[in-house]
Amino acid sequence: MINNNEIFSGENRHLLVLVASKRARQIAKGSSVLVETKYRKPTSIALEELKNKKIEFKIEK
Image (cartoon, rainbow, N blue to C red):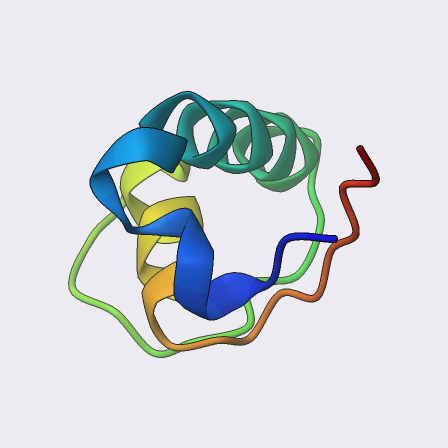
């Protein structure tokens, strides 16, 4: 299983994109933002949430 700490490592960049894009779609459809941020674009907000470990996810191999 991959956790938040591992998603920002170089070899897991594609997982970062997958998780952030799914969250960005949720935000674009009206989901609440989990962090205070200066960003307004859903993708940037999703990445900020991931960076601040506000999103939990599971990716099983």
